[in-house]
Image 1 (spheres, one colour):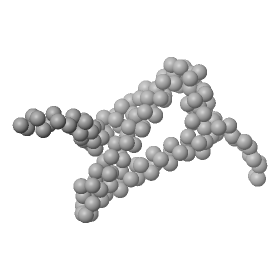
Image 2 (cartoon, one colour):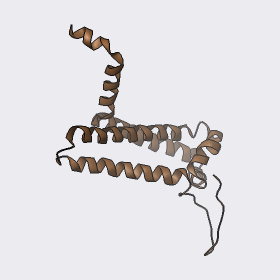
Image 3 (cartoon, helix red, strand yellow):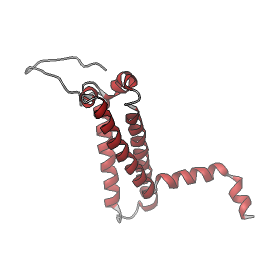
Length: 153
């Protein structure tokens, strides 16, 4: 009888398992370790192949770099795509974990520090992604006071 109930709705079971994975602190720690390893190894290999890699990446908006320049840098730039994917997974994990906190503990203030840390990380990720994606990190620009310069997008 119990087996029939569990097997009747495999989609719900799969969604519950996915939810539990995304709200798991262990999953977030594993994602964080993979993120750090990818960043460390990838940036060292990219610098070894091209010492101006970081200057080239920061000289244009990140979205433009990913679409136009990174494909020309294969296979050196693959680690950046992996880093972006891991970043999205980490953000999804933080969002689900924060939502889970509100769903389960919304009437108690205990654990509020945990939720504030999650929201802080989400704010940092959002600021970085929006800022670098649309060109706030563009370097190598020289402007005189009051001057203007167009940035490629």
